[in-house]
Image (tube, rainbow, N blue to C red; front, top):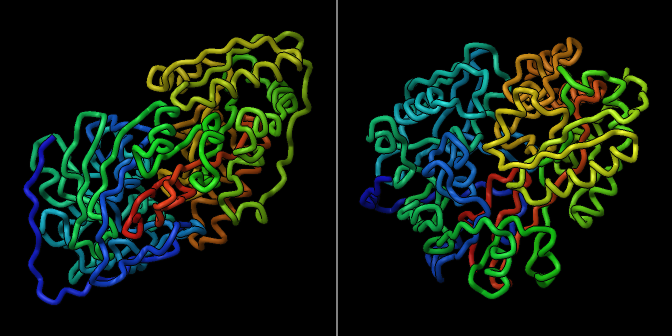
Length: 501
């Protein structure tokens, strides 16, 4: 990975615009507090997942960069799931396929300006990434400078949710220097966030320094020292013994080892579900799927496996999406359950998230009590995904953040539950579901799109292809002297301008 010299623009009398507030809950404000802001010592953070792809912003590491305050896109999500300004200060729809985004005055961390040409080039590179970044699955996108400070973004098919999609951590804006090395992309010193990635020590640590020309104001701390500690117990111990200031994703088993004042619990948009193979095997029969659904006690999972730090599954969308509960539609047309009579099924899951194998064990007991014979298969996720997508298991236990990739509630339905969906683990192909999702995709108004998403959710749940098990809460360990940590239900943010000691 290349490391670039730090360069700073010299702009006399520069007045930095205040950072947008209210995107999600944080301890303390998100604005700088005047000339004295930004003092104090560096922040020490323990991250749960190490970089898997050399900090490639188009892959698995995109969220890691976002959570550390390195990268950002044209838009971001607010607490209600609506798109709000980030690098774009406003936008408008030209026609059913084109949108105009007006850029704010901002700089890249290499000292160059954020221009329409640079933004268009960055989005073009993201659109051409291989494999395709998750936010653009099934979407053909082009971008071009449109005069003044405007960028025109066009999609091959109408996409009413484009402003939401552009909030994705995989659609960040980087400077031309990011692509200087042929066939590679580097966020080191080329992003626009409040913190600049300056040093990486393999997959164990990273150093970030404050970017003083950030458009949202100077960060409250001079930098962040990140350690990547995959073991949840070790991560929690580092916080408890004072080795770090913030520890993300504290395991449920470690909660009681922390003082109450140091742990923060946030409802997230991540739902753990049981996906049933609708194409072949025992669960091809909708009556067998109904029997499995009726056998599962989601409250026992929430109280037992998650020790009360999760909510029983009520749908694809959980309580972190505050609009969902009042809009939920009752599933109709479900098949009646048949007797299991010893039917043998294989349930698979992965151990990257330590609670999932335990969830699978409890499900095994519940399904066997209903008359099924259950075999479990647990692997590391990368060794499991291709077999799951190929339908080699009867059922799959998965934890999926419904809003992480695009911020659009409809997009995950299209990718996970339609005939042509790119991540359709249930192998569901149902005409009524495809129709409901297609209708939802046409809706532009945010509230109406949410209504349509709930109608489509009901159609999906009516097939019993998916059994929502629990809606996860994330537990973040925060030192007593630390404030301004971002408690983001979308799991895109952790540290920002207002994070300080």
